[in-house]
Image (cartoon, rainbow, N blue to C red; front, side, top):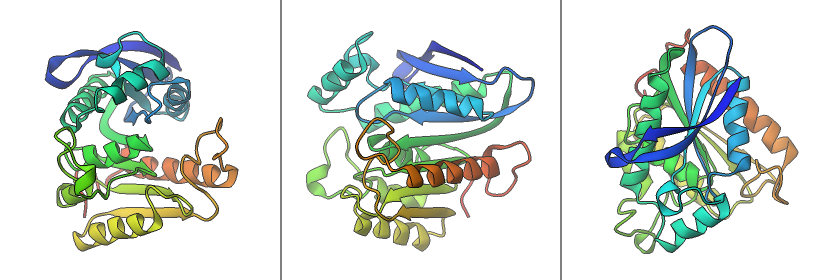
Length: 253
């Protein structure tokens, strides 16, 4: 595996920092865009990127906070982004689109690309999956996919759930049954919307787990939920991003 900091062309052609990890063995691999959580482009997120490479995927995480504090520590950049009102949805989609193009351009790409995000990144993964042509998506406890009028703003003008008719790839959702954002009621509403529009999806909710149960360095870490969650991620991306995958590619059904 090789892991390194790179520069990609993001929204409006802006040059932004990104973290990339790729397998070194010969072969053609699916690609995964990792969307970082609210704490930012941090050590834990980069470890996730490397984990995908270890398991045979090309992976890239764009630094969505790069514009707000170039070169700053993750926590400082996250604070700067929050102070600026957060990352606009259009900018996020543009940055992820740049990461997708980066992955497609790799000589070891098999052409199939997925996206995954945790927390705020889970919401953004849902948004991106309803906006860009992708082959698979994973939403890990993305809050505010269901959003009321008070949650909307010029930067985030549409609730992601309202974009569900545009979802063009299979979606895996992983949630904590004790989470408050998204709550079990939010998860049920998202599932109803996906079912109503005939989308390919699969949801898993873990009893006793709350928000951020994947975070190994937080009190919220849940070993059993995390173990099964990773099992579901490998199965999902293995189904839709491998070279032998054919079901569900390029569109939900």
